[in-house]
Length: 192
Image 1: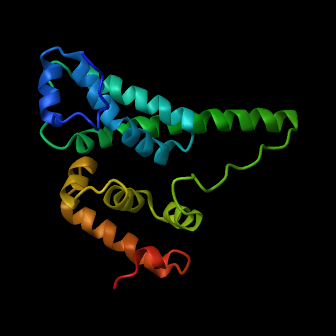
Image 2: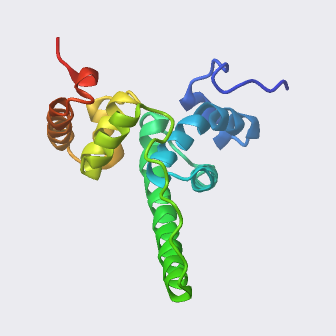
């Protein structure tokens, strides 16, 4: 069977899930190719290190594969995958922070200078916008990115974050108010 890119495959996600449940490995490969870039992008938002994000991507698809056979897709796959990616990425980020703290402690004991800071810009958005988004509370930043980068509906965001739709609306409202107040990024959020 010829291998096709996940985005070129005409089958819907629920059809592919049924095939994976029936033991067809190629169908899982299609899902992997279809969603790997999205999973990597979401993981990168939390990890900020490409190697860590790649690790999270791998762990996410291993987690998904272990759900078969018997997995039932009851929503969009991105809605199902988001909390998995988020939790795995936060675990990896916490491990990295603990390692960095231990390394810093060893450097201080040895009298070494700390290494240079990581650049603020992550390469996938304007530096001013990245700075302002970084200043938002985590929950607000997540809602903004899910809504405008991942193009999820409010109900999909609520499902992915395991919160009521009203909470999503509130977080989005407060985040947008903050973003519109910053002159450096106002043009992204101006209302006509």
